[in-house]
Length: 495
Ligand SMILES: *Cc1c(COP(=O)(O)O)cnc(C)c1O
Image (cartoon, rainbow, N blue to C red; front, side):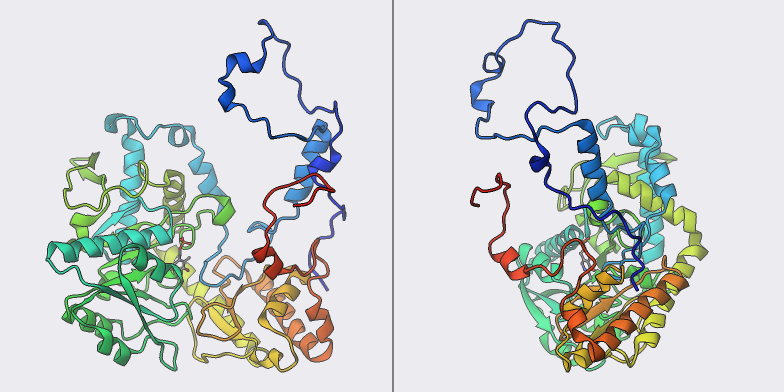
């Protein structure tokens, strides 16, 4: 049933529980200076005396403890992550090779421009690639992730309106948006007005036209949206917003669906962010820091973060002379290692390859949609782009909810998809396979989902008790959120 590789099932104790006085994994060389109490070398105020009970273990115990636990992790080199709105794709190993080249990895960001021309060229070339892919005129690579890119873009929009002596008060955001959108708008000092979606899952243009006034700074739109649906009326939407002097921010987290097919710059978008850790295959989450470049049109260029990386007669330089800039949003040039990996990915794929990968991402999502249709409820039954949203409506009649389905997938060896998002779909299961998943893996995932829908009919108790094959079975998530245990205490002591 399960495709998980069986591993030695060891009940791994905490490393503290293996501890015994005198065991040591490492021995320091004998002192070749006079022995002194530490209080005489360091200011006693820097010494912490409340830490006791450091684990004492041997080297073998130490290595085996961590190695065993590392094999419990689900990771992108083990199997697919069908997490919707995340674009969890494979991270090609060539990216890692290139990022580790000593001449790239070993340079210091404070080196003078003349001695880091190669690195500046990498930054500049990625900017040019992203400009071309998005159809926007300017790019800053500084923001450290999508959310920070949003904040940077909204601050730029704010500066733009302030320069025109019309600060404006509101940001319009569709109700299907990712939570970072309203958060970014709020941090930038705006009040958010939520725009409902229509029956097809697109932003309601009528509601938008009604809410769009000269008090609105911008519309934040995700395209394709979090339902995987392209906002087809984007040019009409742009006319409505621009007609009242507002701007359009595009959340480009779903750019994986568009590459080579559609450019935000051609749709009337004024500023957007991309997520290098999504679309451009740099590590995601625990695998590395993120990167959320911002791209904009000429009108917003003066407000981009400084320094700007520019080219003059074949030399690359950092331009700090941008008095209207929102300033810096990250130290140095953002997460440079991610920028190297993303450029490597773009050059590996090439123009044709990037277009093909968007095609494949869309095809994979629609293959899942087609094969699971009938087994799971499809709240929006139109072909989608890179992701597909199901709900638990069919299974709920048997008492099986989205969370149960997600937990049961673990027993079948798959990472669960995004659940309960977008918020406008009750019991949502949001599946995005991305292009790096092959036909066999897609089929195994689909078969697992179909098997679970059959179990919901015939043996619901199997699902309600899932996962059973994992090291930890169903966790009490309420308890974990309400009274988290954040500090280890020796067994027997109360928390
Ligand atoms: C991932 C995502 C974000 C946030 O990006 P981070 O890089 O995680 O900060 C914003 N909007 C959408 C639609 C996303 O999927």
